Length: 309
Image 1 (tube, rainbow, N blue to C red):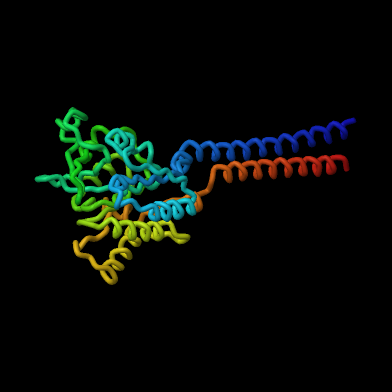
Image 2 (image 1 turned 60 degrees about the horizontal axis):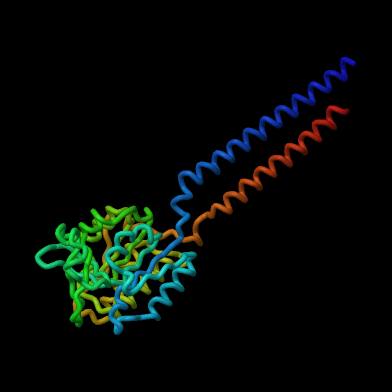
């Protein structure tokens, strides 16, 4: 009877130790899983890229091939593309821009330096009227702007509009590409967009033709979203080198970026294709848990056989 009692106690001790180990490992795995969702998942869940095509308000500047190529490149990298164009790109639209953007925002829109300032304005497609947005006009957040070769006047938003009237924040990894003229002739608009949470703003230092910016924006995306993606600085440097060698450049324009920090220069755009998905994390957690439980069951059976002997 004494020997039988000892065998029974030993078996329970082994089982208790194994169970404690399983609980400990499971707790650690669960903690890792929770931490990932709380602190990392919110950075990777918004796989949206937006194309904002204000230029189509001028029929001669519409370029469906550009939009199709952009969408194809973005889709291939796992982005869900949203396209906004025409009259919908108004002052109210720009107020909510951060909520529409994801990791990439492409603004195919006119831009200009406001008279007697260093402010860069972004054009809307909303026809100007002195009776609308009077509060913004008095605060100099918006201006009256005319597109080249057009008799129409439109509202344009300035850096103070981004500071005071935009709502929300851009994704912390958001790269904004300003395709318009003089978009980075000064850094006022870029500073405001970065202040609103954007990672990097890319734009032109001088005047640029629509066909010119369309072509080089496609090439820029191809470099930034390649299978072996280039950094912001690397991609822009190669584009500028190509412009210098092979293309007429009557306005002596170059592509540049803001801020010019090492972090911005070395930034590589994350894509759905090179990120670990939450589904993968969940599957890994389940595999580890089931493997641990299977090993525990096996160890218990082995311990039982030893005790039986």
